[in-house]
Length: 332
Image (tube, rainbow, N blue to C red; front, top):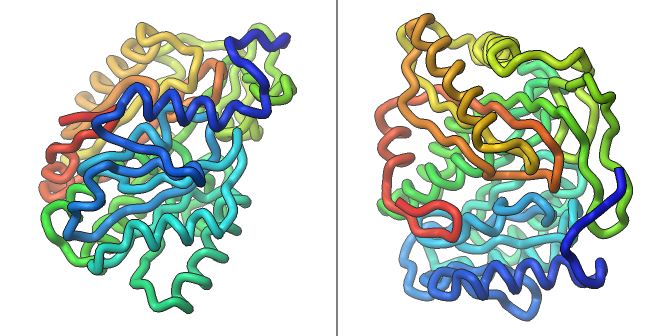
Protein backbone atom coordinates (compact mmCIF):
# COMPACT_ATOMS: atom_id res chain seq x y z
CA UNK A 1 0.00 0.00 0.00
CA UNK A 2 1.51 3.31 -1.03
CA UNK A 3 1.32 5.90 1.73
CA UNK A 4 -0.57 9.07 0.86
CA UNK A 5 -0.97 11.38 3.88
CA UNK A 6 -1.18 15.12 4.50
CA UNK A 7 1.92 15.46 6.67
CA UNK A 8 5.10 17.49 6.71
CA UNK A 9 8.47 16.21 7.92
CA UNK A 10 7.82 12.71 9.37
CA UNK A 11 10.23 13.50 12.22
CA UNK A 12 7.87 16.21 13.46
CA UNK A 13 4.64 14.20 13.39
CA UNK A 14 4.14 13.82 17.12
CA UNK A 15 4.92 17.43 18.00
CA UNK A 16 2.75 18.81 15.21
CA UNK A 17 -0.28 16.62 15.91
CA UNK A 18 -0.13 17.46 19.63
CA UNK A 19 0.15 21.17 18.85
CA UNK A 20 -2.86 20.85 16.56
CA UNK A 21 -4.84 19.04 19.24
CA UNK A 22 -4.14 21.73 21.83
CA UNK A 23 -4.56 24.68 19.47
CA UNK A 24 -7.99 23.34 18.48
CA UNK A 25 -9.04 22.89 22.12
CA UNK A 26 -7.34 25.80 23.93
CA UNK A 27 -9.98 26.09 26.65
CA UNK A 28 -9.65 22.43 27.72
CA UNK A 29 -6.01 21.33 27.41
CA UNK A 30 -2.46 22.65 27.24
CA UNK A 31 0.88 21.24 26.07
CA UNK A 32 4.06 21.37 28.14
CA UNK A 33 7.57 21.72 26.74
CA UNK A 34 8.08 18.00 27.44
CA UNK A 35 5.00 17.09 25.34
CA UNK A 36 2.61 16.31 28.18
CA UNK A 37 -1.06 16.99 27.36
CA UNK A 38 -2.57 18.51 30.52
CA UNK A 39 -6.11 19.26 31.69
CA UNK A 40 -6.22 23.05 32.11
CA UNK A 41 -8.36 22.68 35.25
CA UNK A 42 -5.79 20.42 36.93
CA UNK A 43 -4.37 23.30 38.95
CA UNK A 44 -7.73 23.70 40.69
CA UNK A 45 -8.26 20.00 41.39
CA UNK A 46 -8.68 18.70 44.93
CA UNK A 47 -9.25 15.03 44.15
CA UNK A 48 -7.66 11.86 42.84
CA UNK A 49 -6.11 12.58 39.44
CA UNK A 50 -5.53 10.31 36.44
CA UNK A 51 -2.43 9.88 34.28
CA UNK A 52 -2.09 7.64 31.23
CA UNK A 53 0.57 6.94 28.62
CA UNK A 54 0.79 5.55 25.10
CA UNK A 55 2.02 6.03 21.57
CA UNK A 56 0.50 8.57 19.24
CA UNK A 57 -1.05 7.63 15.90
CA UNK A 58 -4.29 6.37 17.50
CA UNK A 59 -6.16 9.68 17.60
CA UNK A 60 -8.41 10.78 19.17
CA UNK A 61 -7.05 8.37 21.81
CA UNK A 62 -5.33 8.84 24.09
CA UNK A 63 -4.75 12.58 24.47
CA UNK A 64 -8.13 13.53 23.04
CA UNK A 65 -9.72 12.36 26.30
CA UNK A 66 -7.78 14.70 28.59
CA UNK A 67 -10.00 17.12 30.49
CA UNK A 68 -12.44 17.36 33.37
CA UNK A 69 -14.06 14.04 34.24
CA UNK A 70 -11.55 11.85 32.41
CA UNK A 71 -7.73 11.98 32.11
CA UNK A 72 -5.73 14.77 33.76
CA UNK A 73 -2.41 14.21 31.99
CA UNK A 74 -1.59 12.09 28.94
CA UNK A 75 2.04 11.15 28.33
CA UNK A 76 2.34 10.63 24.56
CA UNK A 77 5.10 8.65 22.91
CA UNK A 78 6.07 8.85 19.27
CA UNK A 79 3.92 7.09 16.65
CA UNK A 80 2.99 3.61 17.98
CA UNK A 81 5.79 3.89 20.59
CA UNK A 82 5.72 4.18 24.37
CA UNK A 83 7.21 7.25 26.07
CA UNK A 84 10.04 6.85 28.58
CA UNK A 85 9.55 6.66 32.35
CA UNK A 86 10.99 10.12 33.07
CA UNK A 87 8.10 11.80 31.25
CA UNK A 88 5.63 9.65 33.21
CA UNK A 89 7.29 10.56 36.51
CA UNK A 90 7.08 14.24 35.60
CA UNK A 91 3.39 13.80 34.77
CA UNK A 92 2.58 11.98 38.01
CA UNK A 93 4.37 14.62 40.09
CA UNK A 94 2.47 17.37 38.25
CA UNK A 95 -0.84 15.53 38.63
CA UNK A 96 -0.51 14.76 42.34
CA UNK A 97 -2.73 17.14 44.31
CA UNK A 98 -2.41 15.32 47.62
CA UNK A 99 -5.19 12.77 47.02
CA UNK A 100 -3.15 10.29 44.98
CA UNK A 101 -2.81 9.42 41.30
CA UNK A 102 -4.35 6.61 39.26
CA UNK A 103 -1.90 5.49 36.55
CA UNK A 104 -3.61 3.71 33.63
CA UNK A 105 -1.43 1.58 31.34
CA UNK A 106 -2.46 -0.38 28.24
CA UNK A 107 -0.99 -3.87 27.99
CA UNK A 108 1.62 -3.51 25.26
CA UNK A 109 5.28 -4.44 25.79
CA UNK A 110 6.74 -0.92 25.63
CA UNK A 111 3.95 0.67 27.68
CA UNK A 112 4.22 -2.04 30.34
CA UNK A 113 8.00 -1.66 30.62
CA UNK A 114 7.66 2.11 31.05
CA UNK A 115 4.80 1.59 33.51
CA UNK A 116 6.80 -0.80 35.71
CA UNK A 117 9.87 1.45 35.78
CA UNK A 118 7.71 4.48 36.53
CA UNK A 119 5.99 2.76 39.47
CA UNK A 120 9.32 1.72 41.00
CA UNK A 121 10.67 5.25 40.82
CA UNK A 122 7.58 7.14 42.05
CA UNK A 123 7.08 4.74 44.96
CA UNK A 124 10.67 5.49 46.06
CA UNK A 125 9.68 9.17 46.15
CA UNK A 126 6.68 8.41 48.35
CA UNK A 127 3.99 9.47 45.88
CA UNK A 128 0.66 7.71 46.39
CA UNK A 129 0.08 6.01 43.02
CA UNK A 130 -1.98 2.98 41.99
CA UNK A 131 -1.65 1.37 38.58
CA UNK A 132 -4.46 -0.23 36.60
CA UNK A 133 -3.67 -2.16 33.42
CA UNK A 134 -6.22 -2.52 30.61
CA UNK A 135 -5.89 -5.94 28.95
CA UNK A 136 -9.18 -6.85 27.36
CA UNK A 137 -8.35 -8.22 23.87
CA UNK A 138 -9.75 -11.76 23.91
CA UNK A 139 -8.03 -12.87 20.69
CA UNK A 140 -4.49 -13.56 21.87
CA UNK A 141 -4.93 -15.24 25.27
CA UNK A 142 -7.66 -16.96 27.32
CA UNK A 143 -9.18 -15.17 30.33
CA UNK A 144 -7.09 -17.21 32.78
CA UNK A 145 -4.02 -15.64 31.15
CA UNK A 146 -5.44 -12.13 31.07
CA UNK A 147 -2.00 -10.67 31.79
CA UNK A 148 -1.08 -11.63 28.19
CA UNK A 149 -4.04 -9.84 26.63
CA UNK A 150 -3.50 -6.63 24.71
CA UNK A 151 -5.13 -3.36 25.72
CA UNK A 152 -7.43 -1.99 23.04
CA UNK A 153 -10.27 0.58 23.10
CA UNK A 154 -11.32 -0.46 26.63
CA UNK A 155 -8.99 2.12 28.14
CA UNK A 156 -11.30 4.96 27.06
CA UNK A 157 -14.50 3.90 28.89
CA UNK A 158 -12.27 3.07 31.85
CA UNK A 159 -10.95 6.67 31.82
CA UNK A 160 -14.55 7.88 31.84
CA UNK A 161 -15.66 5.68 34.73
CA UNK A 162 -12.53 6.24 36.84
CA UNK A 163 -12.63 9.98 36.10
CA UNK A 164 -16.24 10.23 37.26
CA UNK A 165 -15.46 8.33 40.46
CA UNK A 166 -12.53 10.68 41.13
CA UNK A 167 -14.68 13.75 40.42
CA UNK A 168 -17.20 12.54 42.99
CA UNK A 169 -14.53 12.55 45.70
CA UNK A 170 -13.74 8.85 45.95
CA UNK A 171 -10.41 7.91 47.52
CA UNK A 172 -7.55 6.55 45.40
CA UNK A 173 -8.22 3.06 46.73
CA UNK A 174 -11.88 3.37 45.77
CA UNK A 175 -11.17 4.80 42.31
CA UNK A 176 -8.61 2.06 41.60
CA UNK A 177 -11.02 -0.65 42.76
CA UNK A 178 -13.83 0.71 40.56
CA UNK A 179 -11.48 0.93 37.55
CA UNK A 180 -10.18 -2.59 38.18
CA UNK A 181 -13.70 -4.01 38.50
CA UNK A 182 -14.60 -2.47 35.15
CA UNK A 183 -11.37 -3.73 33.55
CA UNK A 184 -11.96 -7.26 34.88
CA UNK A 185 -15.42 -7.31 33.30
CA UNK A 186 -14.40 -5.99 29.89
CA UNK A 187 -13.69 -7.72 26.59
CA UNK A 188 -12.71 -6.49 23.12
CA UNK A 189 -12.35 -8.18 19.74
CA UNK A 190 -11.11 -6.40 16.62
CA UNK A 191 -11.58 -7.11 12.93
CA UNK A 192 -9.61 -5.67 10.02
CA UNK A 193 -10.50 -5.59 6.33
CA UNK A 194 -7.40 -3.66 5.29
CA UNK A 195 -4.15 -2.80 7.01
CA UNK A 196 -2.54 0.58 7.59
CA UNK A 197 0.78 2.29 6.96
CA UNK A 198 3.14 3.71 9.56
CA UNK A 199 2.89 7.48 8.95
CA UNK A 200 6.54 8.15 9.81
CA UNK A 201 8.15 5.36 7.76
CA UNK A 202 5.55 4.38 5.17
CA UNK A 203 5.93 0.72 6.13
CA UNK A 204 2.83 -1.45 5.72
CA UNK A 205 1.12 -2.64 8.92
CA UNK A 206 -0.39 -6.03 8.04
CA UNK A 207 -1.47 -7.19 4.61
CA UNK A 208 -4.82 -8.76 3.78
CA UNK A 209 -6.13 -10.12 0.49
CA UNK A 210 -8.83 -8.20 -1.36
CA UNK A 211 -11.52 -10.64 -0.20
CA UNK A 212 -10.09 -11.33 3.28
CA UNK A 213 -10.78 -10.06 6.79
CA UNK A 214 -9.02 -10.94 10.03
CA UNK A 215 -10.91 -11.25 13.31
CA UNK A 216 -8.53 -10.75 16.20
CA UNK A 217 -6.32 -8.10 14.63
CA UNK A 218 -4.15 -6.24 17.14
CA UNK A 219 -3.73 -2.51 17.53
CA UNK A 220 -0.55 -2.37 15.45
CA UNK A 221 -1.34 -5.02 12.83
CA UNK A 222 -0.53 -8.06 14.97
CA UNK A 223 -2.35 -11.10 13.63
CA UNK A 224 -5.11 -12.77 15.59
CA UNK A 225 -5.43 -16.07 13.77
CA UNK A 226 -8.96 -15.37 12.55
CA UNK A 227 -8.38 -14.80 8.84
CA UNK A 228 -11.39 -15.64 6.67
CA UNK A 229 -13.27 -14.60 3.54
CA UNK A 230 -15.19 -11.32 3.64
CA UNK A 231 -18.61 -11.59 5.28
CA UNK A 232 -21.63 -9.32 5.72
CA UNK A 233 -21.86 -6.84 8.59
CA UNK A 234 -24.49 -8.98 10.34
CA UNK A 235 -22.42 -12.16 10.02
CA UNK A 236 -19.28 -10.52 11.41
CA UNK A 237 -21.24 -8.87 14.25
CA UNK A 238 -22.68 -12.22 15.37
CA UNK A 239 -19.33 -14.06 15.16
CA UNK A 240 -17.63 -11.38 17.24
CA UNK A 241 -20.43 -10.86 19.76
CA UNK A 242 -20.72 -14.60 20.43
CA UNK A 243 -17.01 -14.75 21.28
CA UNK A 244 -17.23 -11.73 23.58
CA UNK A 245 -20.33 -12.99 25.42
CA UNK A 246 -18.70 -16.39 25.93
CA UNK A 247 -15.50 -14.83 27.25
CA UNK A 248 -17.35 -12.84 29.94
CA UNK A 249 -20.02 -15.54 30.45
CA UNK A 250 -22.79 -12.96 29.93
CA UNK A 251 -26.24 -14.45 30.51
CA UNK A 252 -29.80 -13.42 29.72
CA UNK A 253 -30.98 -10.70 32.10
CA UNK A 254 -27.57 -9.02 32.41
CA UNK A 255 -26.77 -5.42 31.46
CA UNK A 256 -23.78 -4.49 29.33
CA UNK A 257 -21.93 -1.66 27.60
CA UNK A 258 -21.34 -1.98 23.85
CA UNK A 259 -18.83 0.11 21.89
CA UNK A 260 -18.18 -0.11 18.16
CA UNK A 261 -14.88 1.65 17.61
CA UNK A 262 -13.86 2.44 14.03
CA UNK A 263 -10.15 1.91 13.48
CA UNK A 264 -9.62 4.68 10.91
CA UNK A 265 -11.02 3.88 7.47
CA UNK A 266 -14.37 2.25 8.17
CA UNK A 267 -17.26 4.61 7.60
CA UNK A 268 -19.75 5.57 10.26
CA UNK A 269 -22.40 4.02 8.03
CA UNK A 270 -20.73 0.62 8.41
CA UNK A 271 -20.21 1.05 12.14
CA UNK A 272 -23.89 1.90 12.66
CA UNK A 273 -24.99 -1.14 10.65
CA UNK A 274 -22.81 -3.35 12.86
CA UNK A 275 -24.19 -1.73 16.03
CA UNK A 276 -27.75 -2.26 14.77
CA UNK A 277 -27.15 -6.01 14.52
CA UNK A 278 -25.51 -6.10 17.97
CA UNK A 279 -28.54 -4.37 19.50
CA UNK A 280 -31.07 -6.69 17.87
CA UNK A 281 -29.01 -9.81 18.57
CA UNK A 282 -28.58 -8.97 22.25
CA UNK A 283 -32.26 -8.06 22.56
CA UNK A 284 -33.14 -11.55 21.29
CA UNK A 285 -30.90 -13.02 23.99
CA UNK A 286 -32.47 -10.95 26.76
CA UNK A 287 -29.29 -8.91 27.31
CA UNK A 288 -29.80 -5.16 27.81
CA UNK A 289 -27.44 -2.50 26.46
CA UNK A 290 -27.33 0.22 29.14
CA UNK A 291 -24.30 2.16 27.84
CA UNK A 292 -23.13 2.57 24.29
CA UNK A 293 -20.88 4.43 21.84
CA UNK A 294 -20.29 4.23 18.09
CA UNK A 295 -17.52 6.08 16.28
CA UNK A 296 -13.78 6.54 15.98
CA UNK A 297 -12.35 6.49 19.50
CA UNK A 298 -9.01 4.69 19.18
CA UNK A 299 -7.80 4.37 15.60
CA UNK A 300 -4.89 2.76 13.76
CA UNK A 301 -4.28 5.28 11.02
CA UNK A 302 -6.15 4.13 7.88
CA UNK A 303 -6.76 0.56 9.00
CA UNK A 304 -10.20 -0.52 7.81
CA UNK A 305 -12.19 -2.41 10.43
CA UNK A 306 -13.49 -1.94 13.94
CA UNK A 307 -13.11 -3.02 17.53
CA UNK A 308 -16.16 -4.42 19.31
CA UNK A 309 -16.05 -3.84 23.06
CA UNK A 310 -18.44 -5.06 25.75
CA UNK A 311 -18.43 -4.74 29.54
CA UNK A 312 -20.66 -6.08 32.30
CA UNK A 313 -22.41 -3.11 33.92
CA UNK A 314 -24.24 -2.27 37.14
CA UNK A 315 -26.08 0.88 38.25
CA UNK A 316 -22.97 2.45 39.79
CA UNK A 317 -20.91 2.00 36.62
CA UNK A 318 -23.76 3.33 34.46
CA UNK A 319 -23.95 6.45 36.64
CA UNK A 320 -20.20 7.02 36.23
CA UNK A 321 -20.48 6.51 32.45
CA UNK A 322 -23.26 9.11 32.24
CA UNK A 323 -21.60 11.64 34.58
CA UNK A 324 -20.45 15.02 33.19
CA UNK A 325 -17.09 15.36 31.47
CA UNK A 326 -15.42 17.87 29.16
CA UNK A 327 -12.63 16.71 26.87
CA UNK A 328 -11.80 17.40 23.21
CA UNK A 329 -13.51 14.23 21.98
CA UNK A 330 -16.08 13.41 24.65
CA UNK A 331 -18.27 15.93 26.45
CA UNK A 332 -21.36 15.28 28.54
